[in-house]
Image (cartoon, rainbow, N blue to C red; front, top):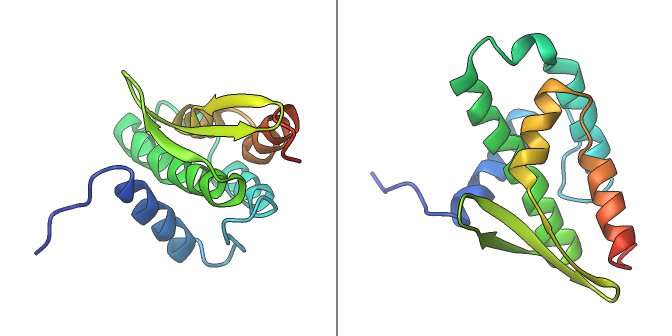
Length: 130
């Protein structure tokens, strides 16, 4: 039995697991697939779930955050970056740089309307990548 991979490889693995598990949604690591991720999360999760099982929701946030992060890495040539407290995705474009807290976006999506695509579009536009 092999050991679990370390980040950021573990995020890539988790992202692929999201694609496999939610195979009825067209999740293919393209920016457009983030609209499907928004729909998926809004369909299956909501404010009532937040207090039900925090540990389970934390795992779900890691799964969806990993998919979001891998989509940014693959579509906008981002890099996983370890900060003092957590991992994020660093992006660079002609108009500047940004760091996206992909796991924070995912955790927020479990309690409020999901904004994976909206966050992508906003950051890509700000950086001149859209």
